Image 1 (cartoon, rainbow, N blue to C red):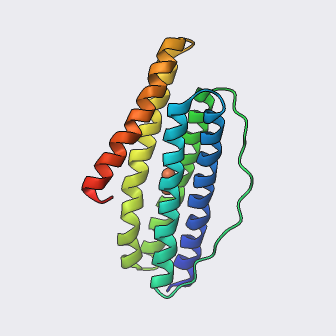
Image 2 (image 1 turned 180 degrees about the vertical axis):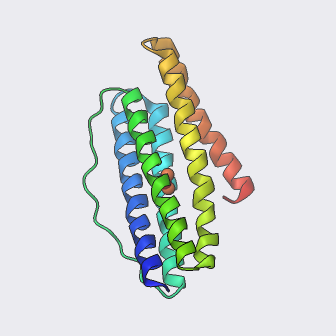
Length: 173
Ligand code: FEO
């Protein structure tokens, strides 16, 4: 495997692992702050990021490279509000998207079309994740300090995960 591509893929392993840990910490924060639906949402996001990481690890190893399992800095355990949490999540995902785009550039420069093809799944995934974070953040801003609205949003976040799980069984994603 091309050494530059391998290094970029391993950097991405680190980012997906950090995403998983960050969302796990958010889930734990939500669970201890009465936001049980949000906690289910973040636990599920954390699981998804772990799957993103595992896909990369398998791909690197199957193509003759060597996947590196990274150490991760401790993510923040305290947050001001759910709005603040989703702002952090969106900012984080924008950074991940930049990293994926950089990976695409490297694949093209190194003429590694197989990895380029593999990474397109991540390009689509990032589009979806950023859009989802922006939609939820817009809703939180609309709700403001309305506790009833926050209760309903928390329930919606839980339901969205039930639907995702149902859909994922159908699509095999
Ligand atoms: Fe897998 Fe949301 O980065």
